[in-house]
Length: 189
Image (tube, rainbow, N blue to C red):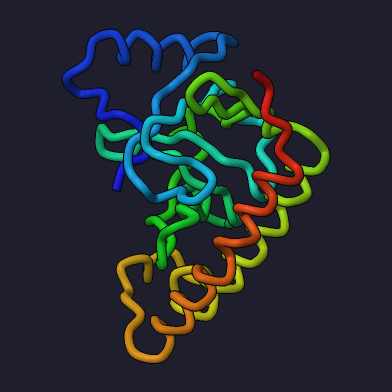
């Protein structure tokens, strides 16, 4: 479920979180879990830049909720609510509960896998991230429209044919992400 490590038992990570939250330092965080497959895998590392004010649709953000860290994609912002950011993992069917801007620690700007690195800040990646976010927003609106339109409905669960269509959307999105990673992503050695 979490894509980033659990900070509760790790004093080193607590220092790193403070460095992101209170200064302009970027730090590398390890990825854990499968919620951002196929783009981010367990064992990858992401460079997190503290860039809360400049968040845009499709950004991959690191945020905290109830003491855990998550790395998911920003889909939408509800301006009328203080808890108004809609976030979702690429490999998740339903969006996360809405979060506040203050809960975001930063944005993933680079990906490191084994000995290779790839920037997520290129114009091509920015465009692909926006397209993926729009597809996921469509999926979220279809599966649980109350969650997207009305934050108080964030615990709603979609079942039946809606759920199957959502799985189909995820299935269709996976090759796009893989292709983007191979053709657009420039791995640096």
